[in-house]
Amino acid sequence: MHSSYSSPQTYIDDFNAVDYYQTYYSSEEGRLHGEWTNFALQNLHETFGPGGVNGHVLIDFGAGPTIYHLLSACEAFDIIITSDFLEQNRQQLEKWLRKDPDALDWTHIVKYVCELEGNSENWEKKEETLRRKVTKVVKCDGLAKKPYGNEPMPEADCLLSCLCLEGPCKDLEAYTNLLKKFQKLLKPGGHILLLGVLNCSFYHTGKTKFSWLSLTKDDLESVIKKAGYEIVKLKVIARTEKSWMDISNHDSYYYVHARKSQKETSCI
Ligand SMILES: C[S@@+](CC[C@H](N)C(=O)[O-])C[C@H]1O[C@@H](n2cnc3c(N)ncnc32)[C@H](O)[C@@H]1O
Image 1 (tube, rainbow, N blue to C red):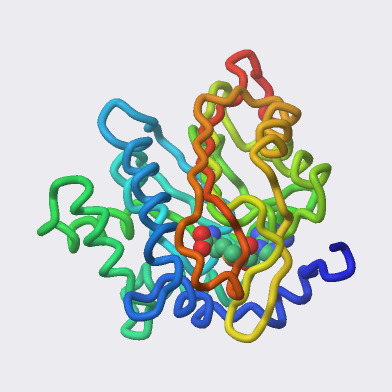
Image 2 (cartoon, rainbow, N blue to C red):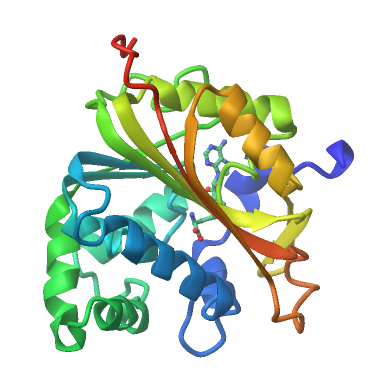
């Protein structure tokens, strides 16, 4: 597996943000615009809904060119800092935030989240809320000692990451180390939400195949505990849509809600 690991340089050279959106999220042909988005959006809706997780600052790690996962969070947080490793993805995020005519179109997904919230006619207001709450788009690197380098980052009430960590992390040790680094970004008792796919070794974006660290449910549980978090909820559901195994070979979807210990006082 290591021989086919997609290096940071491969991401820089070959990850096409528009191809990624077209392949997985567009309303016409998006392969994830089905099981994955329904699973992720439903769980995020329940997490950030009334009486759920909320606070001042949410850090979003490895957004890619996407905003779908922030649509419920924007009702529960004052400030959202989103991030990605790649400039081409950050450019797409900036375009959407400034309503550039060339921006990726998330309308179908915004409307879906508004329906979950019982407010289907309010989709434009939700887009405005999210645009207002995202205060910056910054570079992150899960392989760096400090994932945000010298960027000043406030302590977060919540860190969210969807479909990201299994890309840069070559093995379980790297994954655990990255989760440990996230501890420093969170307030004591802060929430961490991880969503992704299990038993997956690759995915395609356009013509490029990217490696993915294949995790089982037990692996996931063990790395989260090893990194010092307390698991609040871990949910796994099986993939039923099997017609595009050539695009990505995952067999299930996961959602994890965990918390940093209350006792931690240091943020350094
Ligand atoms: C499969 S995409 C996921 C995008 C998005 N979060 C989603 O839910 O669709 C994987 C993401 O990992 C990011 N990535 C690659 N190398 C990284 C690194 N060293 N540190 C942080 N993120 C990285 C890529 O830029 C890409 O956006």
